[in-house]
Length: 250
Image (cartoon, rainbow, N blue to C red; front, top):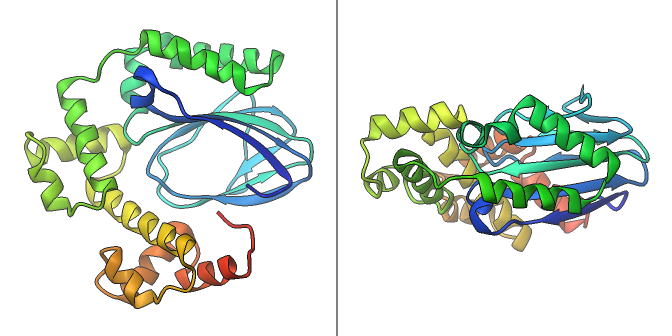
């Protein structure tokens, strides 16, 4: 996070960790912006104080459900803003809304927003996670294999290999992933290749880009550059230069 933004983050355990990547609470000291990386997932943002925008779209209280993440999003916030959120894994929100309806219905999220307004701390979200863990069931058979496919793609397994590792038909998996995440398995695979390349650059900003393309599963450097810019809104060369210059980036 930029140094003008104070962030607290908690990763859940128990049943809720099957669905939720993290809950977080942020407070800004000054106005600022940053880019949120793309991961194919959805989140819920609660604006508690000040102004918060995503891609110049001002978020209104009490909460905002983010669409599936297809590309990096620009986050902007005013001085002294307070905002919090729940970040889910890809293809989780719809299934979870059906399974624990009161918690993730509009009235349930409004109630959580009210609790955050009264106690604007990370502890409020951690308490909500405990309630979620007690209410969330095990994923259905079809959803378990949907998550298995997505997990394989996150590990950069080729799409064809990922399909073969799941005991459901390809068409059924494609329909299930698209219905739950609004993204195709092929697009999710593109996102995770770019995320892998991004992490490689963070580990070694001086890495040769042709070598990086090969390590991350791209056909060549040009392919890497096109995909990186499309999904992260910056070229890998510029990203590496910012890293080398110690510029705070996403």
